[in-house]
Length: 236
Image 1: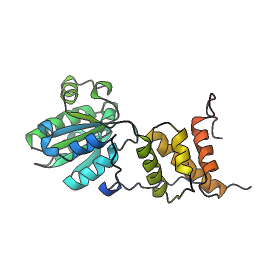
Image 2: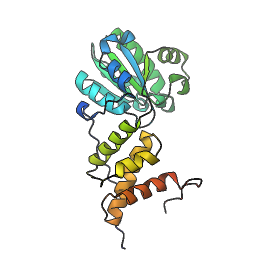
Image 3: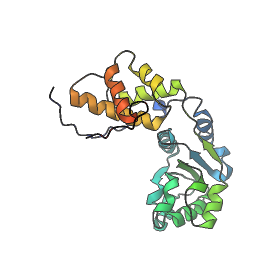
Image 4: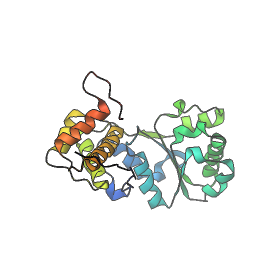
């Protein structure tokens, strides 16, 4: 069978509140994000692993609050004043990367202080707690380390299934009967893996000119995880 050359052009995910999937794993985080008036000193740190929903929450929170969104590794001291409006709101994403970019730590330190002075609410997202960010500026480390934080938990089977369905729909893929159930039974409860798996299913379905069937989806999962007891073979 001939194979098509595929280009991964990416698919913009739906990131509105109505597209968010509430579940026990994110219930506490969602409840706190919806009560910014209760955040100590107007700040909240949202912690969770890859693809756990941090950016999705930050996206609809920012839209509802009229907030600016900025990546932590793009922060610069000369941008802080413009990013922090009086009484406004700001979402800083990927705060665990703040130590890798020149000037970002100093910028976040000034932003932290200025947001308090101007009564601006500040939401930060990160994959790990502040102690693991590699921050070298002691005053910044002490501030973010003492901030109110909430974690996104591991997904249950229901959330994992719902996320797979959403990711497939974002790519306009409509799996056959039993596909999602078979994947959920076999894969780790890892939303980052779910995202990579759907991308691989999309690539394989397009390359082979096939519908998303159970055998195709399970082959895609095997390509990512490898057969039991064996390393995953390289994709050549």
